[in-house]
Image (tube, rainbow, N blue to C red; front, side, top):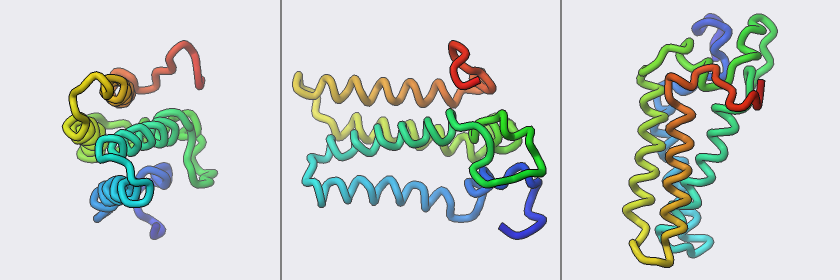
Length: 154
């Protein structure tokens, strides 16, 4: 980051607005899926399910659970009480970056759903992917801004 790029409070979240960040993000997901298929010899639906679930766990913890800035910043302690998602785009809703994050969750769910055959042996896989999708979409809703369910993570 160059000095003077945006307000100092955005050091940890401004990367998503940078040129090429979205392409890099999607490329990591696709590469992960290809790696799981090639190295672990997983069937396509299982590889996509693993990518979907791991992506959900990592982004839920990093974006919606951990508070503060991932980089040491001493000039703006007010961001220490906000999650990454709450700091993104100065808490403005429906910005391109926020829409991108929701679209990634939706696309992963749709790809996983399409790749998973409909038969009794894959019902659990469909349920897991649906639960992951619902939890991730709920976490990104504007009404969940600064909400701590059951007082957890206050």
